[in-house]
Image (tube, rainbow, N blue to C red; front, side, top):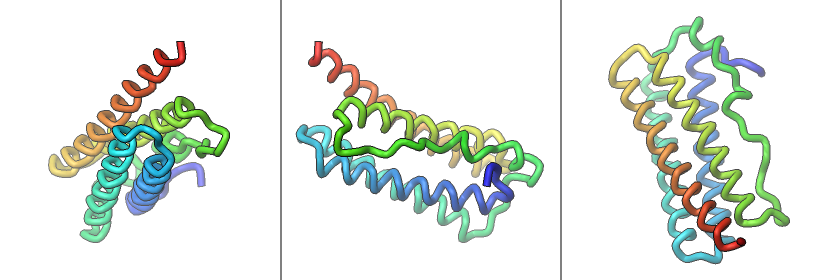
Amino acid sequence: MNSFNSFEDILIFAIGAEQEASDFYLRMASQSLSIEMKQVFNQYAHEELGHKAKLMKIRENGFTEISSEQIKGLKINDYIVEAEPGPSMTYTEVLALAMKKEKAAFRLYLDLASKARSEETKALFNSLALEEAKHKLRFELEYDQQLHKEY
């Protein structure tokens, strides 16, 4: 599937992506040597589950916020980060991957907000986009700190 066919498809994709993000952060928390980053990863895992719950509520309520014409313009590949963390990845590589994942989620929610019909749904998607942007910024700060330690 290259394109989404319905708002339902988008919600299913986003719900799955939020669960994957939570699982990713829990794995990173269990592997983190830094107590601070362990807490950050655990917090983000919890927040991603909160995002999932919000999306599931939209799905359960049967909203059809975005028209079929608008959905066809959204390509799944624009929101997928193919790489998965491996045992040979360095901490900075894991942080870079986390930044890419957060950027993809941010773009998805921003795009959905721009296409939503109701102000309530626009606000929800903008709120989710903002939370993903905050996650990305936190990883960028940690990434920069790690690079300074290496040099």
